Length: 353
Image (cartoon, rainbow, N blue to C red; front, side, top):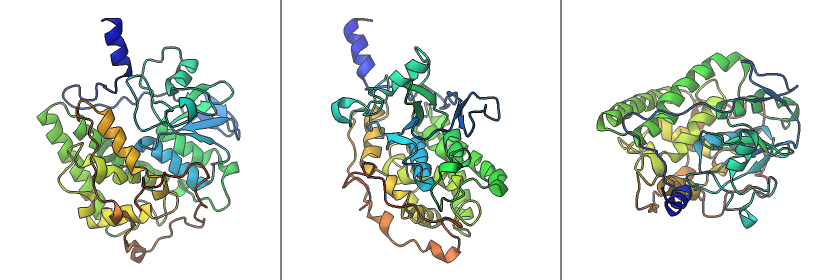
């Protein structure tokens, strides 16, 4: 391969998203945990100590997996304890980049690419450079990119630094049910939309489509009689489902061919999604412009023109949802978070307003 060709490939957004047959997500991550005393995780994962100001959460607004960590950080009031770096909505074949920051560098880490923090930890890191990732600021090394555990550790290991009135997102008496719901939502919905979008054959797509809508119908039925997924207040389960629902009509319905119907055509799920969207900590983290730019520009093998669609109409997100009639208390015995931290607001015109 010539130097010219190598350079083009290196800086292209093209990736092997559709590789033939069924899409299988690589779930091997840097599994270190940040624990209150730096002890190893429950499965022997290397431990790092909870320490205010030491770590930086890198979380692109466009990414649903990263969006979870931003929501949980905000709900728990950890904004002044764990700083936030946000890459732009697109990335090339090498890495997420900090192209929205002055001079194209993260202002705290001083790097242009998240890849640099991975390489400081593991030279020539062979897997995908993913967000969310937590970086140790003093060393500049990635601590973990194990996104399912990042939010759970925010809830259980950083309790000393939670804001007054922080909700219980992973209460002990509901953990078994939360884990069960999360498992099905992940396999069938969070990852299910990707299984449809990245299917490499008609047979793989048909199977993925059937699985997705079986799960969506299950959620529609479940949420017809209860306001939240588990218990009578918001939990980790709601955070994990919400970030997929927020992207459904804007991206997954068309771009990923998840088009049996729109989310807005499912009364319970649409009401539930709007209820959360209008709850402080959820909708105020959603940047629809960056979301659409990410999927439609980065996935060149699905959308080779890289044209970003103008729709859909987003005003429906702010309409009354009527879910209060089902009871429940959004934050349990806690309270809503305050205003979005200065500098972390969604840009004007990028939300649903």
